[in-house]
Image (cartoon, rainbow, N blue to C red; front, side, top):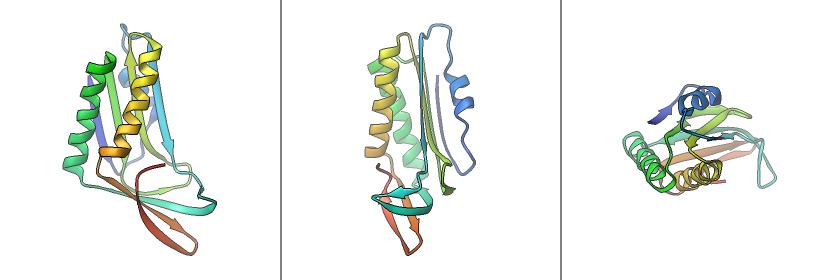
Length: 138
């Protein structure tokens, strides 16, 4: 099962975890990316995410299908927020289930790394003294 979501409503790590649970899966790994309060030592007030939705969803789906093939995943969930997010808000949730734990960890890492490289999602960092658009990379 693949579940992809690009949304301006809050994300639920618990919901994503439940979606990937499977009786044949011995490993479930969940990555939750949150908004931190600083970037390169500079205080962040909030983030704003924008995406080219048709292409973003298509690219997230490609990542998920690759995970199924490459890591033997039984279920893959990739949810990403858009819009205005405050400090500690959840920006992305990736959940993967596989028959064995090592593959689940590797699949989850592959998903977030590939998402940041290939999915057209951009973030604007808002500071006390200005703002800057950056690619959605760490």
